[in-house]
Amino acid sequence: MINFFSENDFELQDENKIDSWIRNVIASEEKDLGEINYIFCDDDYLHKINLKFLNHDTYTDIISFDNTEGNELNGDIFISTDRVVENAREYKVEFNQEIKRVMAHGILHLCGYRDKTESEAALMRQKEDEKIALFHVEQ
Image (cartoon, rainbow, N blue to C red; front, side, top):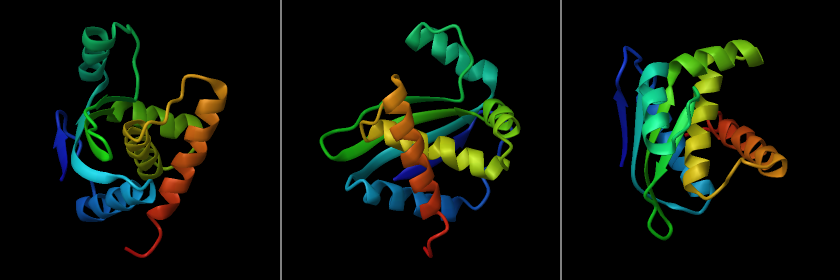
C-alpha cells in the first residue's frame, strides 16, 4: 500500500499515476511493496525531524525512515516541498520532474542504495534518472 499525506498545503497531482509508477519502480528493483507512506511537508517541519531523529541542524529535501523487512519495502518518506521547489530552480527543471526524482530517491534508499560517498551518489543519480524514465512508459 502506498499512502500520500500532506502536512502543508501541497496536493500531489495524478495520484493514481504516481502510485502506479512507484509500484513499477519497486518492481524494477525486484522488491515487494509493503506499506510506504509519503508525507509532504514544509522546511520547518522536516528540519524539526532532522534535528530530533538525526541530530542534523540542516534543511534537507527528504528523510526516509526504513522499516523494510526482507524483500518487502516499508517506510515513511518525508519530503519538504519547499526544498523541492528550490531544487527545481537550482537544477533548472520542472517541479513535477524534481518531485519524481525525490520520490524515487526515497524508494531507492528503502532498496538499500546510499549516497554518502561520491560513487554512491553517482549511482543514486543514475538510478533516479532510470526510475523517472519509467514514469513515461505506458502504465
